[in-house]
Image (cartoon, rainbow, N blue to C red; front, side):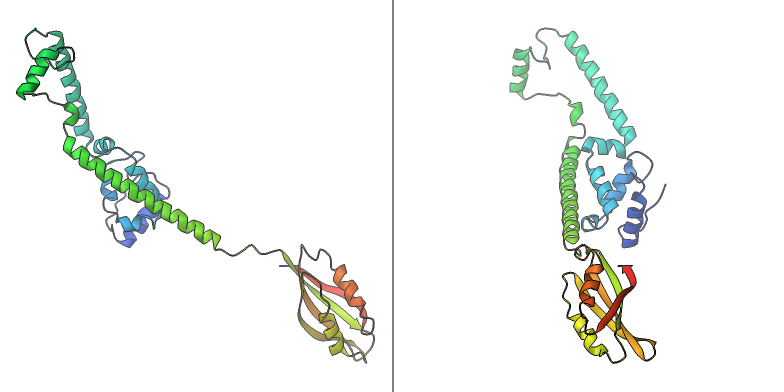
Length: 261
C-alpha cells in the first residue's frame, strides 16, 4: 500500500494528487479506512487546488455515516448486524409467546403499553441506536464536509471558466507573400516606386519590410513583404493587378515566396 507520510505538506498533497490521477482509492479497488484516515489529514483550503484530490474527496464524502463506519471498522459493523438480527429474533419470539396481562412491545397491545409508558419504565433496547450519538455527529460532519467540497469544486469550475473566457481570441489564418517588383530601367526612382506600392490599400493586406536587390547592368528591383488575411484576400492576383497599375514605375511583378503563418 502506498504511504503518504508527508500530509498535509505540499509535497505530500502533490504526491497524493498524482497517485489519484490513475487510482480511485488510496488502497485497492474499494474504499477502506485508509481513505478516511487520509481524507482527515487534508486541509480544507487545499482541496480545490488539486483536481484529483477534490474528485476523490467528494466521492469519499458521498458515503453515508453508516457506510463510512463500516469501512473504518468492518469487523465491528458485521458484529452489529448480527446483534441486530439476534434482537429481531428475540422480539419475534416474545411476540409469539405473549401472555395477556404482561407488558408488550408490539402494536395492538395498547392497554399494557400505555400503562407502561405512564409509569415511565420503557426499557426497550433499540439496536439501530447502538451508536446513535456518534452517528449523529458523523452525519453532521459529513454534511458539512460535503458542502465544503462541493463549494470548492464549484469555485474551481468558475475559475477555469473565467480563465478560458479571458484567453486569447483565436487568430484568423494568415499568409506571408514576398513580391519581386521590377522597374523599367536604371533611371526609375525605386524610392518613389516603393512609396506608391505601400499606398495600395487592400482590406486584409498589410505591407511589411522591403529591400533593393540588384538584377544586373546597374538595375535593381524591390522585394517587399505583404501579410494577408486568407479569408479576406483569397488570391495574390488581386494585389499583383494593383501593383501593375503603377505603369510609371513597374515593368512586372512576381511572387518570390508564399508561406502560411
